[in-house]
Length: 269
Image (tube, rainbow, N blue to C red; front, side):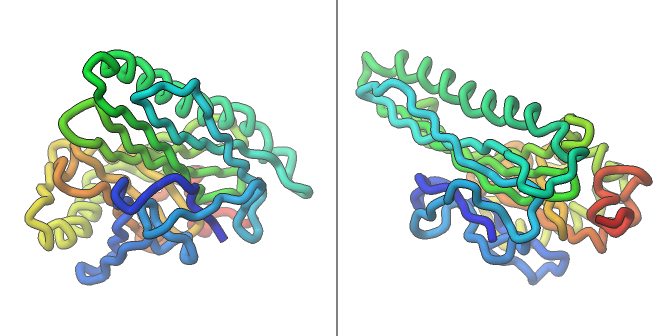
């Protein structure tokens, strides 16, 4: 269905511990896409060109950035390039170019930053590394949502692992913020906190920081809304996680006419 990009070893990033509504229902792989391994899973997996989930409206091609070789720098960066498939509606292709520009800029900007760091580290012979992998969660109904997994080394006392989402409404050519998808009100935050807390209670390394819960880092799939939680929300000692909430639980927070309405039953394909 969906594949993760090669180039990540088991030590790099334990991304996406799914929390599926019940306090006891935690697993190592997100609920959606169901047949995919999460970032950091054992063994590398190939990401074939033009891969797409069954029924997807667009194909995803991996683009690999190959910077100039430097003695103390290792770079493994792959970002997605979207292309319409035969039969893709014309209305759903408006924002493809905008998405591709932003995805490319995300990867190239990270490379520029790590190259600057590597130059500063060269005199002291400090190994410097950047790995960027991506995984698409949604490729249909005029919506694209992709999660990036990033590992950076040489910028501090230990490698830094983080994740970020990029979600686009291709019909408007606009990147979506959380408020464009769901109402970010007090009731929504209460639901997220009540679902997240049991998972964090099981780990002494994780500390919940409610005051830092901006909920601005997310991806969406056809079946669920994922909040990506990193150092600022749950502490540096805790692996990056995804809080997974099925659309069925989120109907009270879906605004009329929002992009989420296409996925939660508000709009037919």
